[in-house]
Amino acid sequence: MGLVPTMGALHDGHFGLVEEAKRLCDRVCVSIFVNPLQFNNAADFDRYPRDIDADAAALEAMGVAAVFVPGVEDIHPAPIYMHIATSGIVDRQEGAYRPGHFDGVATVVSKLFIAAGRSKVFFGEKDYQQTRVIADLIREFHFPVEMVVVPTVREEDGLAMSSRNRLLTAAARSAAPALYAAFQAGRSRAVQGSATAPVLASMREVIEGRAAEAGAAVTIDYLEAASGEDLRPSDRFEADTRFFVAASYDGVRLIDNVAVFEK
Amino acid sequence: MGLVPTMGALHDGHFGLVEEAKRLCDRVCVSIFVNPLQFNNAADFDRYPRDIDADAAALEAMGVAAVFVPGVEDIHPAPIYMHIATSGIVDRQEGAYRPGHFDGVATVVSKLFIAAGRSKVFFGEKDYQQTRVIADLIREFHFPVEMVVVPTVREEDGLAMSSRNRLLTAAARSAAPALYAAFQAGRSRAVQGSATAPVLASMREVIEGRAAEAGAAVTIDYLEAASGEDLRPSDRFEADTRFFVAASYDGVRLIDNVAVFEK
Image (cartoon, rainbow over all chains, first blue to last red; front, side):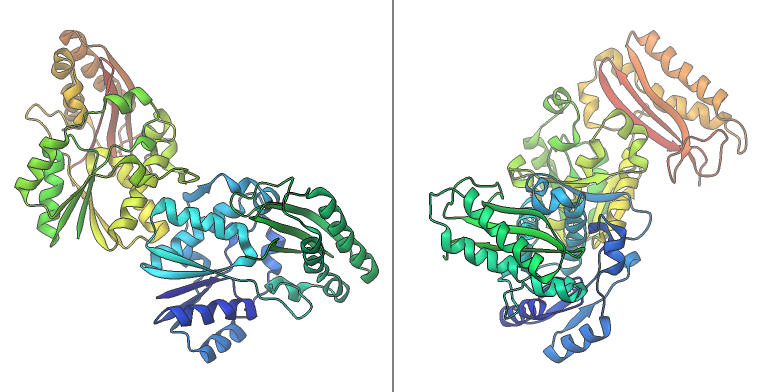
C-alpha cells in the first residue's frame, strides 16, 4: 500500500505525490487531516485552507483506493496524555520558529503509520526538514514503512506549490516567486568552497526588493545555506549545501528549499 | 500472535503470562530486553538481574515460538532524537519516584508493538500503573494490539514474584512478605465509605514492625489507598480502591498492589 499523508487543500504538489505512489504501489490511500498538534498558532490552524469536496473529487478522478478523512477525535482521542517528543535538528529552522511543531508532526505521522502498517509513504521535498525528522522517526521506531521523497512542484513563475498560496494577497502572490528567484541567483553565484554570507546577502536583496516593488510586506524568518544532512548552517558551500528560506508575505508564511548544486 | 514483553530473569509471574498467551494465541513470542531508557538510576540498571541462558531454556521447554533478545542498539539505534513523552497518571506513584520511567516504558513498548504488528500483548498486574499507562498508549496511538492483564503471582508467603527478589538479603527476604500481609490486614479492616487513613497507618506498622524484627532496613516510598482508575489517593474506601506500595528493603525496591474489595 502507498500512503500519502496530507492536510488537504490539494494542489499539484500533492497530486505529484499521488502519481508517484500509484506508480510504485498497488493501492494508494490519501489521508486528509489538518493536525491541530502541529500548529503552534491557533489562528494559523483556523485559517488553514480546507476544501474537502474538491479534494475528494480530484482524488476519485485519480483512482486512489481510499481517502481517509478522520476527525480530530479519531486521531487524537481525549484525554491526551502522550506524544512523540523530538530533539536534534528540530531545534533549527521550522522548529525554532514553530515551537512544538515537529512533536505534533511526529505524533500524527506515527499514528498514521501505525494505522497503515507495512507500506510506502510519500512526502514532498518542499518540507525538507520534515522529511529528515520523519526519516529519524522511521529509523528509531522501526516502522515497517519506506519513505519516498518527491521533488517540489512549482508554479511556472517558480513559486513552490503550497496550500497556503491561496491565502496570499495579490501583491504577495506577485512578490513571492522571488524566493525561488533568489535561490536561482544564489545558485549562479555559488562555488564550492566559497563563502556563503555574501551570496545570502544578495539573495535577501532579491526577496526584499521584489516585495517592495510589489507593495507586499515581507518578513524573512530565516534564509540559510545549510547542510542537507543535519541542517547546520554552512559558512562555505559544500557538495550537500542547500538553500532554505521561510518568509511571511502580508502575514502568510511560506517555506522553500533547493540543493545548491545539481546532483 | 501473542507478545510477552519482559526484562528477563524470568520467574513464575512471567511464566503465568506465557501460559495465558499460549492459551489465547496460536504462537507466542517472548521478548527479553532490559531497557535502559526506563531506569532513572544507572546502578539499578547495572545490577538488574540477568540470566539469559536459564530464561531461554525455560521458554524453550514451554514451547514458545520465538524468544526475541535484541541488543540496546537494535531497539534504540543511535543517535536517539525521539521518545514518547507521557503525562497524567505518570505523575503519581512510580512516576513520582522514578522520573522519566514511564517515558522509557512507553517508548520501548511502542517499538515492540510496532515490531509485533497485530497481536495480543500480556502484562502483569503487579505493575498496575504500567498497565494503565500502556492502556493509554494503545488507545491514543491506535496500536492494533489487545492487552491482557494477568493477575500477580505470589510466593507461598505472599511476596509478589519479581526479578528483583533475587537481590534481597536474607533479612529483607524474610521481612518483605509483610507488604502483602499489610494488604491483607488492610482488607480485613476496610469498609466501603470508611476513612482510609487509620487503616493505612496500621498497615505501615505491619511493614515497619516486621522489618525491625527481621533486622532489615525498610524505606516506604508510598503506601496508598487509591483509585484503580486514575490512581488518585482516596480519603475513603470506594468500590474501585486499591492498595499500592513501593518499599526498599536493604536498598532493593519492591512494588505491589491489590484490589481492596474482591470483585
